[in-house]
Length: 624
Image 1 (cartoon, helix red, strand yellow):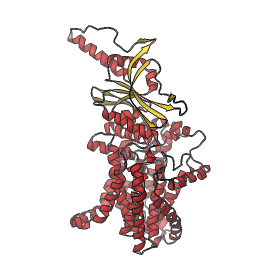
Image 2 (cartoon, one colour):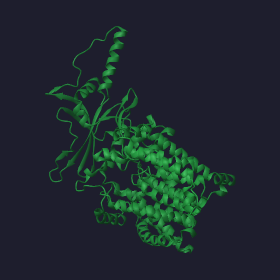
Image 3 (cartoon, one colour):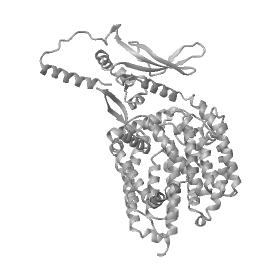
Image 4 (cartoon, one colour):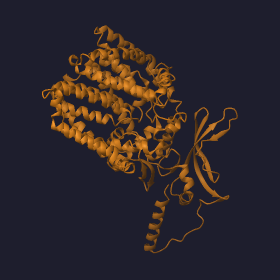
């Protein structure tokens, strides 16, 4: 018994230290810290936890790939596959040039931008809910914790650190991630079935308008599939090399992957299974000191997830009152019908790819059969095949979870992006099954079909992007951003229930509710011309039979506010979006927002300074 692999693994003292650290992390993350303190801790420390994990990850990658990088540097361009670089570059360009850069899924992307803003300015994790332009400097005055994981806003904040804060940095980040992702797809295909297979994988994704939509957005879904694929490839590398640098790189890739989307931790299961499988084969626990402390760098994730217990609205069940719980097997039949509607719907209605959908659905069936077969022969399979076998269970679990989700309808404009991991599974399945057809003619034929799909469906669909025109929130966000771009300065105040959009663009903003609660403050600012203008955003629904316009609930400032429309547009046929200027504020028919009397300026400098200080103190208190 003492000579068994399990006994040898359990005799490793470093393993027991890891178990102790993990147990401590579980206690801290789930039991010892109360809910109220949990979010405060994440606010002040979340950035530093992610930074530490990211630095360790980059260092582990360097240590693992150093020799190969140095050898490639010695060989120069001779070591570069220029044809594959060209394919990746062309594929990424196709995805980026046909879609307009913008915030596509507004709530997610603006909240992520807000978190990156506070990470950049103050190294805290908050979405700004109060902020003002004070004499030319924008100051975040208050914020709230968002439920979304931290890795994407952290990377956004790094771009801010390098280039300066700009909302468009989210698009720069996703543009860069697009080429990295396609490069990883090419690398996977090359490992599995040779060089042309890598090109096929890139072509299949280049013809997917949904990927182009996310590549030009400010969302985290592209990073999600990138980290899943990167972790799979690093898993294959660890299986092949079985050394500490590759092990550390794998573990920290998985750790960061779990901090991209809520459901991404599902893929930790195949990572752990692959590690244990290697340990048993090796008869020893391969465990670095960096991984021993890794559980401590996940404590903030457990604390962050408390937000779902603290806030009833976090699951957004209020958006669909007919559902009482977020996940249920009862949702599977309906969600499957919507998934089929998405994968094979009209290109004008859905950003899909017939070629990828057809090939992927067939390939997944054959891939599952291959996985069943290879489970009995894992020890004789290649490292990439073994890693793919383990990750297949992760892809299946993720798809199953989405089908149980109360809002898992893939053909919904807001939910389509949740199908990206399934699209990744489809592409990987096509490349894996391709191994069974080693004749070059097969991959060439499929490559030709994929290119034909890009030309006949992908490019026309992306160029028309009709599937974007039904999502009003995205259209209104682009419209508001154009309004911001048209203003010579940002010294104005906007009243808008979606105030976070303006705040992340460094424009002073408040909500209609706050305006009602702080009427005296609005009188003060209008009377003192604190802002060059005060604007209000409102949306109207139009009755098709009568033409009557009805203001959206919560947008009405009341009859005392005299408004002057400055810009309006029907972004959808039966919806009017309007921005108006507040001309004056009345009370009982009398204007109360104008100066009522002249004041004599004191001659004494001390009195002037005292009056200025008193005014400034009051000004700060009255800010929206």
